[in-house]
Length: 229
Length: 234
Image 1 (cartoon, each protein chain N blue to C red):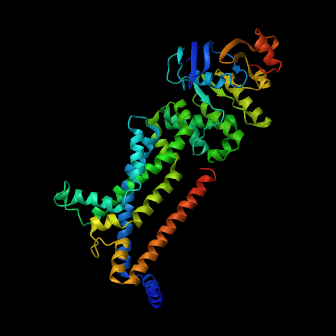
Image 2: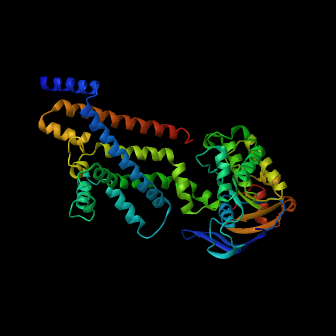
Image 3: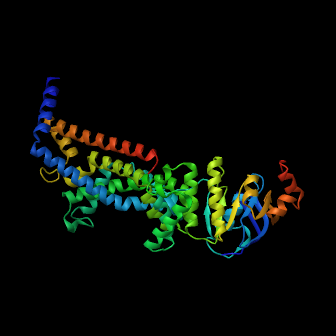
């Protein structure tokens, strides 16, 4: 699936432009963190790259219906057991029952939910639910995994667990593309940064360079904690 | 008052002794309504799920039509099935009029739109929640139908119970197409109507008490299921 290229992508909702002329390339490599103020269009960009939304103008390649896997800000868990949730997309992907069971068990171990395999998924805590959603997406073995603010509603302990899982998935060679409004999290996880402001990609830089000294005045102001408009 | 009091006592005696005529009527009623429910569910639930996920021209009109059919008077449903099944009707050669089969068909026709309309509402809410995630897994609306039917199973059970309650309690449709023939097509509701007009209040009351107990039980079950589903949706 990689590299994924967005070329001059526009997107509007109800006549309101959300993204304008977005051009960027996602290559295999360390996690890419998409940061920027609320309303910058981070979630929409993620959905466009994943394939849930279609650009109003411009194009995204490769032209697949769905690119990679995705975990949403509020995990969408099926009204089934933890194990049932893990197996559902694997069955949908056409994997045999043995392979489903093998991958589901490995995924449960990875996120530390093996003891809860037979619990109804929707009775898990918020952190457990997000870990399950991550495990479910990672079990598909995608080469790119989109994460939309996966820690937005989690406490620090749960955030720490989720970040460790994300780092583990990245270490296996899966490209992580993730939005966050938490600059500390971006510093902890990012290999590269895409800075988005008011629907435009202001810069795409290696994380170390970005945090040491961003190329744009907007990003510099954002890092100083100023409100951008 | 004395008449009513003695009628109630006689009714209780009929229930206590398991009066064979009463049990026969009860058994037929349950058989007809449950069979109708099964048939209506096979049609109505998938239709409701399809309407919840599919977007096509005319969908809106179909939804409005189904909602309107929820209020279809049973006696009108009975009349339509009567016209279909009567000797000169399109299905007349099967000789089904005034049989339990005719009553099943009429009740199924009566409650299938109810099941479809109610399940559409339930499943549309579920689809709103699931749509992005299922598309992310590569499942389109068609593949989503069985997923929604399974994941909405608790809510759908209450829909089924609502349909059963409607079928068991209606009198118009089974009266028109069944004919209220003693020992053959006489159900609880048609028997109550007949016995009341004949003045045999004890049997009418006994059947009425049983019918109310069934409807009450069904509603309690529905409520318990709603609460169980609300506690976490399993």
